Image 1 (cartoon, one colour):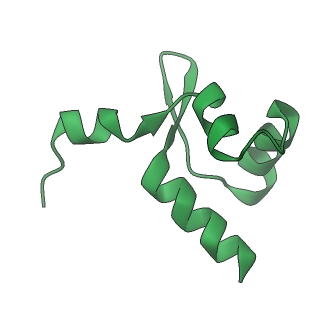
Image 2: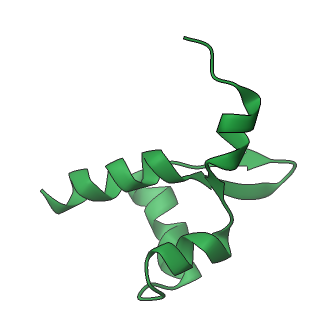
Length: 65
């Protein structure tokens, strides 16, 4: 199955958007820790972190079980 680049890009969240999704209950520091320790889904494009919304939501659901 080929992923269309527009679908992939439209699914990406910035750090600010991710924090809003998390209802601002966590800090950037916590997100960076999750990336390092818990392997939170992310991609780095030209040095900037992006978060695939669908994968992050799945990751959160798995973490809550």
